Length: 544
Image (cartoon, rainbow, N blue to C red; front, side, top):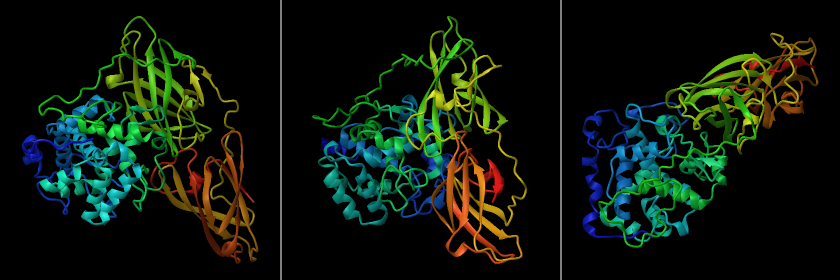
């Protein structure tokens, strides 16, 4: 359990300002109006999209921006544990050294921003006791901090925190800083995805980024471990044991190995001034699975990664099979999946082949450009699923290279039993015998909402109507104004038959009804923007 110790260390947290030597100058940046001007807004160090909720428009339900007040709360927790306060550079250096970032090295002020972000995460969770930890409590106390009373927050700290921590906060007047940190939205400023998307494997079922989602709550703030839209869980994280989740966040507090045990029982508090636990430096590369046999020239390639809703993160091991160092390397494959611009340690060139396939040329770059003899590098990229792989689970080489591995840059060795058939040509505009259809709608992460204006092209009232189309996309949920019957084909296409129902069952002569439905993207269309008929009817228009 945590322990209180000599009171002369209780106020060490106030020394944070002197430890943030750059704060005086940086504090000249603009801050959110609700924040005390002494604290730095994370957005002043860089702002990117990263999520639909990265900006102030995502700060709903009492959510607040991330500021350096979180670092103050973090150091107050470290002092309670018996460790010295640290700087944001210390926290950032730890994160970069333990595979908890997008890039292996910091650029610009990335180390400071990452330090602020992980200090916030550690302060949000690291106070909880092993014996009472429950991910649901993370949601409950954050929601209470944002929308409820401070007294109720502190009552939960007494119930679920380490012994004496609540008294420590109250006696030293730290409780408001702690509560303010609980209010902060992890997506804010885009650092969660743009810089802190750690690929460290956790229990073989998730990566660090997934577990970071513990503090991301549903829109109503009732559930933890939610995804970027606050609408569904971060599935891989739910497979990680609760003990490992807490130890991961405790590792942030002590700046130790994220996969080791921390703070379960301290016994005597650590000596002030002692060095934080250093993670072991294991230079041994994990072995590659030779069973795939994906080889070209002097390299072999193996793939692992995680699936998520409509997409995936691929971690690609590239091993130098020769006896000499490689200064450069490349491999090529064909896939139905659309790779995104998020790439680490490599660059990817894309050629559209048609029939829903893409040829990719992956070339080592930056820190991943050269490979010593007999060693491996691990590069990574994100992508949107073409042929559907599922919304959770593990990615493998066969799934990523589903269109074929190019073994000699001239021949495609395809594992697909049935390659996609040629798509039927589209008519423009799509017109059936009795109705014409205009498509409008919006794209969102991995999915879309379609609004279809169905126009009666005849001179008589239609008592019923229907039309059919082919698509790589699947329909989800309950449509409105219509019903949809779907037939799946082996080549990754679906035939959807749309029939008017209820208020949209009949259409007067020359009139139009508007129906709609939601769906999951097959061939990726993007994470924002407008849906059109070409995007929806990507397999071909059939008509009635």
